[in-house]
Length: 447
Image (cartoon, rainbow, N blue to C red; front, side):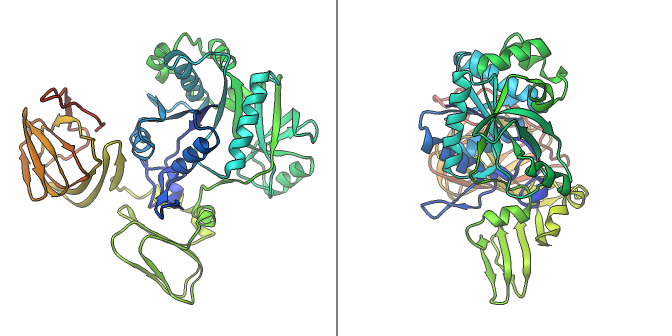
């Protein structure tokens, strides 16, 4: 299988665990066999590998999410980074062109496109294989997957098939309705439109030539910011006549709010939390290193992270976005391809963070013009380079870099650092990167 996973969203409905960098698909809430936790994107990736070990998995995403993807999935997964956001049609075209022009996959091969964040089981991926087979056999130019609705949802668009067969023609599409209209659609045999479909690669490349004058991946990437913002549904799906839909009757949930997310949790608490015996239908997700105690709560969600604390009735939690939009908070936690950082303290002229580097990874070789940095190594072993001079480091070492000093650090084992930044203008934009060639050491990570 060749699968394109669409990864987007700012995740404000799941504040404070999500932000502009860390969307809902990166929150680790699902228990793994070894007793740890994994995120939605990790869960989906592992499920794909379980069904098809050799599947080509490409994640179409923004620059802000690329580091989190590599952090959670490693370097095996292909990541097609959009230069800027232009909705799903340009994103799908760019990813398809990437597979054909960069990865060398034949334009006759079928490709599946689906969101990265639905809550599904293995039968969903078995169905994706059938969807790809239908596209490869030429059942239609575009083969959709329609989800058998379980209730009259107002969150999804609807597909009206021509009959009730497993694979049917498509009569028409309907936009997101109100609950009463949704019920009427379901009575007519309508299916949820989950944004899942398959096609042979040449189909989308031809559409791209017709609609945006596509020539090749490199040219498309260079002029990406000039493309119109338009969804794949509007640009292609709703205009296609050679189209069919395959029914899917398995579990498929969009975990887009705290209410729906808590329904998928296998246990009431993730992180350190205590619920007394009078609590009912309460879920806690705590990322802080302090305990959360809940007493006498009913139908509540409690979430704590470095970004803030949410205490909400589950039903009301669906309406938090306007309130979160008013919060002006810098990102306090982020995953990078080399590890992660957690901001511990911020003042007008300083910022203190706890940085964790994964074994075998490093930061970029870089400098800052307007701030000094001090690194306190608190655990692990590695090597640092400061202005071209390399030295070994371990727990207890303190490194000082004045403004303008070029520096990086590489982890032999997991390396934990307390980083203190001192300056009047501490900004993510105050960074200049350099090539590093000393003793065979090279950059292995992003900023």
